[in-house]
Amino acid sequence: MAVAASVPDTQVTTSPGRWGQLIFGIICMVMIANLQYGWTLFVNPMDQKYHWGRASIQFAFTLFVLAETWLVPFEGYLIDKFGPRVMIFLSGILVAAAWVINAYADSLPLLYAGAVIGGIGAGIIYGGAVGNALKWFPDHRGLAAGLTAAGFGAGSALTIIPIAYVIQSTGPIAVFNGVIPGGNLAFDIAGGYQSAFFWFGIGQGVIVLIFSLFLRAPEAGEVPTVVSVRQSRRERSPVETLSTPIFYVMYAMFVMVGAGGLMATAQLAPIAKDFGVDKIPVSLIGLTLPALTFALSIDRVLNGICRPFFGWVSDNIGRENTMFIAFFVEGVGIYALLQFANQPLYFVLLSGVVFFAWGEIYSLFPAMCTDLYGKKYATTNYGLLYTAKGTAALLVPLANVVYDASGKSWTAVFIVAAVLNIIAALMALLVLKPMRKRFVEHS
Image 1 (cartoon, rainbow, N blue to C red):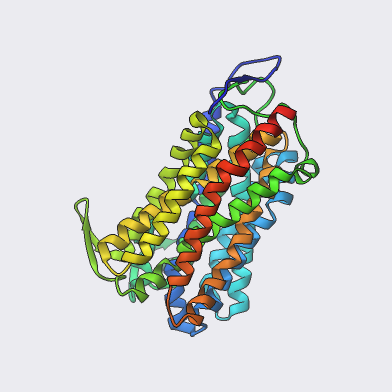
Image 2: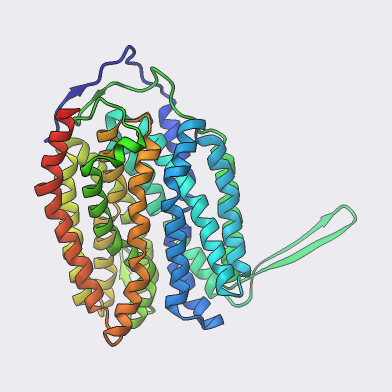
């Protein structure tokens, strides 16, 4: 239940520029969305070209997520200390370089190097943008974190179809002819997955460079001091945060829920192919697309919408109550997808349910973390919690191992993911909620 609380301060003004800060952060998040959510489109083409095997290729995805998450505490400390502008500017260079490397990668070590570089860049942007939103909006922390995270969750929705088109194209997709001093300029942009990596990587990095220049942390008196969700009045350092038991309860829940969503993100294309629905046309809302392309597009939209939606809900009914609802729906959705994945329409709809009920962890957990530990070290403290996503990513290659060991069946993988979500839902009410109440009262 939401409880009104007033945090003492000498000023109560609100900067109108905080909405601009939120928008700039969201734009940067949109530009790194494809690094994670567009990855599944590249898996099969790379395997067809080099025959490395899905498990070996998906290890690059795991390395990306590990680099994206486990370094965020260190990166967050630098952002908290020096501000987001410089760090995010540098990360724009990294995310562009990562996909350029992937475009030329003709060996697994080079592919893995690109994954690590991309993960470092994406982690800086993710931690910096979310941390900045948490600091600027203490009165709507769930909503602000959700909107920012939505940029990452739904940011690839508009580019999924163009990327898929470039990957599937075998000839030139664009031809440039022009005149430059001293001669003519003429070149083609060829199709294929390597071209998609190269051109989209460059474009995404350049846009991050531009909008990073406008980011800054709030100064005294620029944020409101009246909030609707009970929050701790004490600013806790990262060391103090790690000494509290409630942190590890949140960490365990994050891993449980995150694993299923990451598995679906990385494996959706192989799952669709194995169930034989990837290329079957599906008609919805006046559109007809192959089931996999339709699912990826809808999933990105719903994965983005759910983050501010559930963040807003948590600002009004409490974080733990919202977690219970979302995690329970996620568990049911994963099990239902297992039962009906061989039917193209249900594959599209149920994958949308899974992503809608999963993405909210990226608004609920940062909001809860900052409610508990304060905004001074918000980026660093949430960075510590965000490493749970990296831990969950370790289970993604394991899904392939279980799939192979069970006779090319996804049944065991889906059931485990569904059960973990149900357990996390119960933990939200029975464990986390009473612990949070005692923690805040003590603070």
